[in-house]
Picture 1 (tube, rainbow, N blue to C red):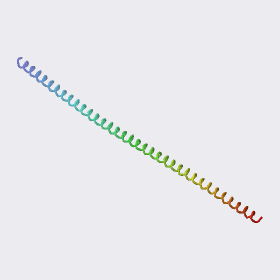
Picture 2: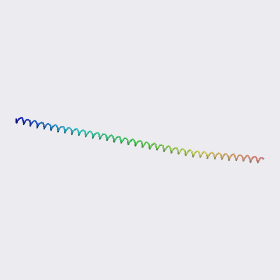
Picture 3: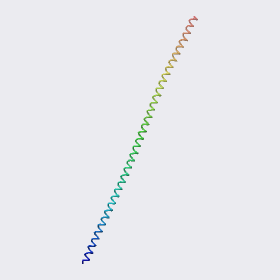
Picture 4: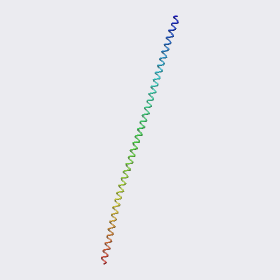
Length: 128
């Protein structure tokens, strides 16, 4: 009977040891899975953050490009407006100069006409 009791105790001890071993292995496996899951999550977070940073950089670069393009377009418009104003001013001055020359020409022609008429008048008086 003692032998049977000792065997029963021995078997219980082995079962307890096996249970503890199994529990420890399950705990280690669970811890390992949790660590793997944490690492996976951290990697995914890192990748997501990098992707967001890259997207933000691209967005910023695009906005900068658009702003630069807008400034260039504004500068082109400003230059075109200034050139147009200069051309208008030049045209006005040229027109005024042409008008002045035309009037001077008309005055000169009128003086010549008057001189010719006076000369004819004086000749007519002398002949008379």
